[in-house]
Image (cartoon, rainbow, N blue to C red):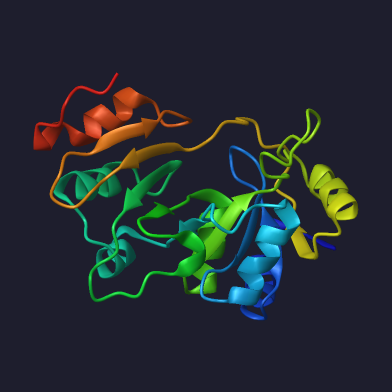
Length: 217
């Protein structure tokens, strides 16, 4: 496994384009990333994590504009993407009827638009990426199987799982160690806070306020 600096993100993008899996830091923890439209690459993520394929991966986009082309966005979804993307907010979104769903991320899909190093990599890749936390997936995980917060912990995961990670982008220590906030945004219905994480529920409420969104608490 190669260790790259953030200045070497173009190298990471080339690895992804070649069908490889790359580990990338976020404020929360390191994520395993692959091209969403590459079945062999996404299968490698499932295998590395011992994750059932019935548990979809996260879809990462470069902008709200890309979300508009792929998903049926409600008024609430547009407010959330406009107010809180890029960032640590994930939206559960229905695909547009004319768009073929990407199987590894499911339907509806859990969709993010990251900032920081991961966001830069998605932009360089020029296409959506599929991602999951660099850790063994539940229920296979044991008490000591925690998400990787450093590049060194990614290396331990790689050695232990023989995961086949081509490279890790070393962004230092990920300080938050919490999940993304998830908001369910069904078409034609009010947005609903599904899980609070690094984005506070009050931030979600504030973003939805122009639509008269319900109090989220």
